[in-house]
Image (tube, rainbow, N blue to C red):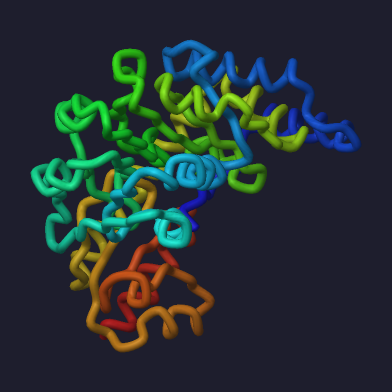
Length: 317
């Protein structure tokens, strides 16, 4: 599930416990606004551009629900699969632009041709499950010049990549960035996501009501007061990702470069996912959603990664 394998620091856990003592109440607007202010500070933007929610997936669904009635939705395949499924159910017209191995590069000319009518482009950058970068900032700017095109960038793995298009939001009202605190801040069990939007998005979402639990709000606020622990855990995960990538290649698997906390690899071993499950190891088999023989594995604790590598070595032999 691409969670952060490290628990948050003790002060964040204590903050969540403080929130538990108030779970008979909905989160109050004062604390929600405090969270928005800290997110704005973290993102170097203004708090009036920040919308918070119980996870980024909920925000993705909300945007699709709002804008799918009179616009074509353009997405890449593969992408964050829940978003693809939801778009398929609600879009007036859905166009899926395919990514192909080995580089998983996105042809921006194809995207530009598709934006010949009112559209909303939804991209995850870095992409899940390939781990690849689909758009650099200049390419996003080119798309945004078309005023009838809305662009929503899912930056759930921003902290692992380190680059963003968020600074374009003030200049382009047709841009929104969605992020999650699940992965980088170790809050997957609490679900905190946020959107930083241009004016077109903010106007349509003015009535959006965030329903975030008290423990989630308190933990998120405490996490953003000092991001050094998060930054340290990101470095550990990246180091482990690089080690696992090198070991898998050394064993004999084809592994693709990643800018996230997971790796995409290819194997011809029959029923690899089932064989791993029998060894109490669960990875994402992408056969049903995309291509046969492709798998996504989350980077866990060093001992978990070592156990995975040991099994993978034995299976290949």
